[in-house]
Image (cartoon, rainbow, N blue to C red; front, top):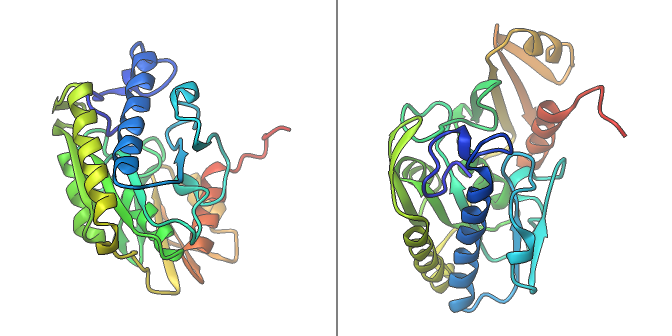
Length: 266
């Protein structure tokens, strides 16, 4: 949701925010705009993944009957759950810049509360870049990203050619000059239609293997505990390293690291 038009603070991003209910509608409309543009250019099968917060944000009754929806957590492949080599392309709607980027609205990578860096093969990545790395494992390219001007450029500069739908200009972590929701939907729809029309131009992003993951935490204790695992190396007081055979092995480790809680029930 951080990359939606009009989003600037936590007040739009979760159930406790006074604007969250309205922005669930705007989020759904931006997804619908991407769907409509894709269908306009010939897309016939679409899977939508709710990848924000609790994974239960999209208003499912507003989605077309021929669309499938993936919701809630945990799930394999995280924000691009459901991906396999049968897909032709992936669109990232409402994305934001990385935690190491000094610009961008709500810039963070996976957890603004816990993490200060996530790197793959010693290069800091955003959630959009991570998604492209996972889909690239299955030979599927990211063909479109929407969000603010910083997030879209950061992802395209790293991954390569893709369509961009810029719906706001970042002024700071909690400020932006934004399109209206309706105007943003039009921009997304046009970019989506263009992306599907030229889908053969895009290439999947392939991560060299083995894949090295470095994660830096704000707090000391999780790093200490993770270092007790023989598959984890503590590289400094706040950073751990995990090396996997491929991006999916790294993704599986990251999801477990981020989500596991011994109090989980049932």
